[in-house]
Length: 450
Ligand code: NDP
Ligand code: 2IT
Figure 1: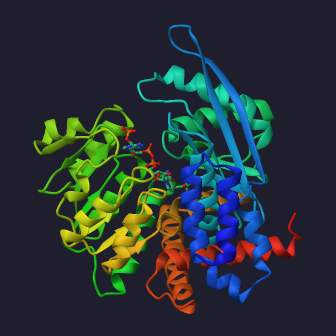
Figure 2 (figure 1 turned 60 degrees about the vertical axis):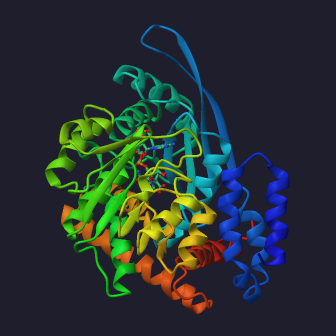
Figure 3 (figure 1 turned 90 degrees about the horizontal axis):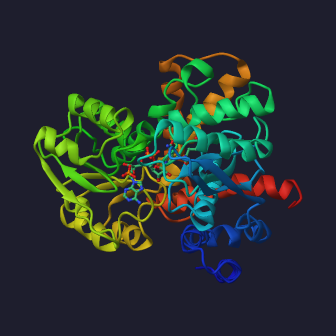
């Protein structure tokens, strides 16, 4: 790491020694910025600021469960950087949520949103609430209590949250309803809304579709494609489901899916009929992925306790799309993919590959797409939802998908060209970090480092 960047990195660790996920995300970006600082020494001031959130809001979320017991969760919103537009980023409801995880996500979001080319700053929020096993009534009461505090900190021109792990269409609906009641106005304050109240076509599909569009562009640089490729996908939520759908559209064969309990390996391929069954299982019945193995008769492996080496990445696959959570592919698992002849990895999740895994992919010449580039289609389409809300118009499915695809092609080109310009051809990590940084840096400097 460049010595000036190392000084900033050390100060980040000293300030918040207990935030390993945030350190990991910062280290990866600062590692890429050495050549930028040599070319623009004045941007050192920007780097010092960009690692510090503009604002962190933390609050108590009390709610009553179905037995009438009071439950108390912790809510957060991190407004990381507003230099290029209103803060924008998802809400995560998961028991692991803490400041380190949300700061890493908010930090990545700043660069990701910049890469989309749309005017969106970076933010992230959520709660340590665990929606798993909770009734619709409990989830609604929780969302209403969460919004009772959050509403005063967000707004269509201020901060526009959306979904992430544990926050899908149901939760966004409950959150939007409560915001509308408290603020007494109907605005595009959240994205991922239902179609009947201001949502955009293709937003549910966007992250998964975008990840596959990005991977398709990467593969094309080596005259390869998804046609006939075996694709290992982790997760079985929003991102994984629509990544699998787009893989099928492009002639590939998804062979794995997972949840936090384990993974299925279906070497016959997860076809459209099976995928429709998974969508019903996960989005309507809210069941577990083991039921797929029972229903369709294929291999199922239960997850082992941490470290999370559960074997999914040992599947024979040409392409890997990690779409579950952070640090789900470690160095050892990356090696298993390489040994099986995997040619490309595109992150649908945020930071699913550890630094050791990324190093292994680079050393072995795989195509590797970092999440802040390859999963940017979700937030990009949120940006398109905001545009439609401002216009008070709805674009067709084809129109939104066309714009999403164009944005993903542009992000790919921008990351590839920027990497080449700074002497790191083929390194999408460096290209995405530098390209994302430059736009925000220019805006922060122009605005006087406030
Ligand atoms: P969902 O909640 O819809 O699905 C998450 C999936 O990952 C579930 O199958 C879940 O299993 C699994 N999972 C979550 N945490 C863990 C864990 N600790 N260990 C093992 N499996 C886990 O979330 P999304 O699909 O929306 O998000 C997936 C990833 O994509 C996240 O990293 C998110 O930040 C990222 N992302 C999401 C975007 C979006 O638009 N939704 C946009 C860009 C990135 P289980 O149900 O058992 O917990
Ligand atoms: O990580 C992400 O980019 C998201 N969860 C989507 C954020 C958004 O505002 O759509």
